[in-house]
Image 1: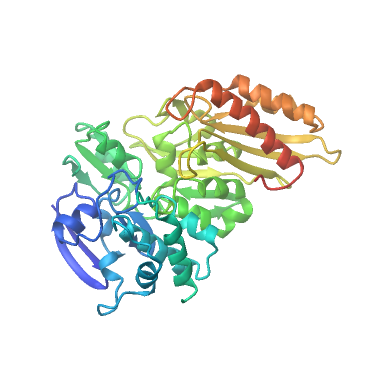
Image 2: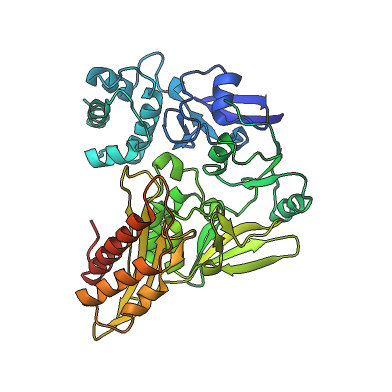
Amino acid sequence: MISLDFTLNERPYRIEAPAHWTVLDLLRDGLALNGTKFGCGEGVCGTCTVLLDGEPVRSCLVLASRLRGRTMITVEGLDRDGEPDRLQTAFARAGAVQCGFCTPGMLLSARALLVANPAPTEHDVRDALAGNLCRCTGYTKIIEAVLAAAGGR
Amino acid sequence: MRLRPFALAEPESVAEAVEILSRQEGDTRIIAGGTALVPTMRLGLVTPDRIVSLHRIPGLSEIRVHKGALEIGAMASLARLVRHGALRSGWPLLAQAAGRVATPAIRSTATLGGNLCYAEAASDPAPALLCLDSQVRVADSVGERVVPIAEFFTGFYETAIAPGEVLIGVKVPAAPPDARSGYVKFCPRSAEDKPLIGVAALLVLDASKRVGEIRIALGGAAPTPMRARGAEAAVRSQELSDHAIRAAADTAATEAEPLSDLMGSADYRREMIRVWVRRLLTALREDRPIA
């Protein structure tokens, strides 16, 4: 077991975890935060994306030991007092959610984009979401949603 | 689906890391970002008993310019290479190639050291580093040695790193003044794939518009990333005419030793090397970005 101190969704955590766990194992099995999905397990599908110190990472590829001293945001940390944030609102309004499995990863990749680039072009959005796969073929509405959130609509 | 349990070592110095490696206890693997090792473990291709993580070693993530050369720690992420101001201005070829690896959420995690040690033949950064005559710094329990990048890749997913050694950094000398450079990555399917083939080139035209300096390197063109030295010789000291460029492209296609895999056959790779060497050299001649 290894002991870990980190900040998750603005709350401090101190927990023990098996050394071979990934960040995704820790979230889902250690903390019962099941918003972050296990898709491919190989870093390809993007649904396990979380933000680590503001950067999008694939939580299925990162060993839990890398969390020490760092700050993580998952889909559970996006809302403000139960109110959806502007990206979540934009996704709902645009109909960017169909089955919903890809949505957590889409939201966090989009959030990282908007923090780094508050006024992205459609090309920027496509680049940022490359590697977040949607098998409902919903890309158009997802891109519209991110652009709408960026435009404050 | 969990990873098979392993013992995790998190050394706090290079000396401690190589001491752990020197014990040779079972199958020991080094982890940097993990974007290559973890999928390889999930596929069951490697089943390490022990993993040595380099993330706690101070200084290994550093990127700095020292005496005109770029020094990149093994643990520097590809995303940091792309964002780094000095790298973008002084070594744009490397920034460009690093920015073409996979997707943002991989580049944030993947490291330059890990990319080199995985020794993927279709690496994006490797052809850039080959064109820039980079040097790889390797440490073991005795000390440190420097391996020229041209001697670093020794075979299919094989490198010059011996058991007990660890890659600690990469040194990239200053590019020649007035050098033009570019990297193209050809992906028949989606942009986040590794390339079917990649081409990096660095060109300096002399005062009479002849080729003063030319370096061409290929990814996905052989069992290892490679310099296309025949193609370079085909245009060196020449006027960079369409004819000369075709000769270089033909030579590159001939000297490549591509493998066939699910992405494409060896023949297809050769043809695409011919096409993309020609397009890249033409774009560099005209000093315009390649579309």
